[in-house]
Image (cartoon, rainbow, N blue to C red):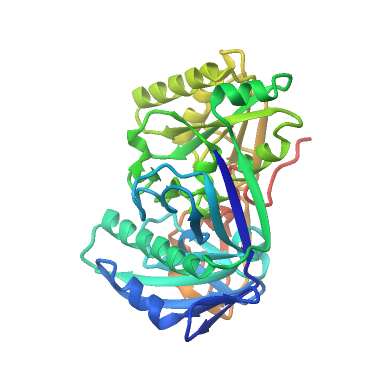
Length: 428
């Protein structure tokens, strides 16, 4: 599959009487967008805000972050099986509104939603402080259960992203990047002298609001499978989870997976990037055994020499991570695992809940238990009181002066396990 990503740089966002893009500025008809979102079942109120890099703004609790994209050529549409018909995506041309995002907030769905600060100390820890954000604060029918609440909020984000992306359908891009992965045997023969490398992409699927969707299917119901990397760039995988904010993959991160991007950059130079194997992170041992068996089997079937494995979440999924690593290594395939740490506030505790001697090549994206103090912001979009109850917060996190003392686990994207962030660790 060959996919052309056509990037339209968005350098500013303004509210206007018409939704359009001119001179790299996105103009948004607030009333029209609110009216569109109010059509979503069980949504009772919508407010829109603009948050730019450097603004004294705190957004919390953050549900999802989404990059607007629209297919202009090729099969299907963005977010297939969720917002468009079920069709195989990943080829053709897709216009991308680069430098901006849709951020959704409102009454908390699960206690593991997070914080985005657009300035100050907290802005250093979230990659989304660097974007021009259109923030959607939505309220829902109070009678909804948590799963219905999560679904309604998820639809608000996707529908907003699709609405905005349409403004870029006819816009000439500022830059174009083309990605291609060929059918398996053809790909293997193209760079036969280079090591064949693949990517095992672990998706959060523990249920209880810890869900990820693949072509609209709850990924806990799948067995591991092979995907073209370009399918992921076209929205085949979306977030529906409320796992700890620091290391969950918002939909924006799935669309812009940095491991996939880096593998493509080195493809044909240092190795032959063969494709992606997606797998899940289930709760029960039998499911973990099944999925890790399949991941290892598919790596062997593809004839891989090396594999990168990334995790989403922590604790229970640490076992899935180590099982994948161990079983793939037992196939004589070299692995590198990418994760983060929950090593205690002093950094002295065991970093992962599981371990194996074969897991000897590890990339860490930071310690989620690190405590920082976030200064008071001039404006809060959402509900500041959740600071005491979200994962990473504690009774007394929110101070009388509006500042917050919190573990970075509560900051959206702070220790993202596929490296979509700024942190790592040093060994001594």
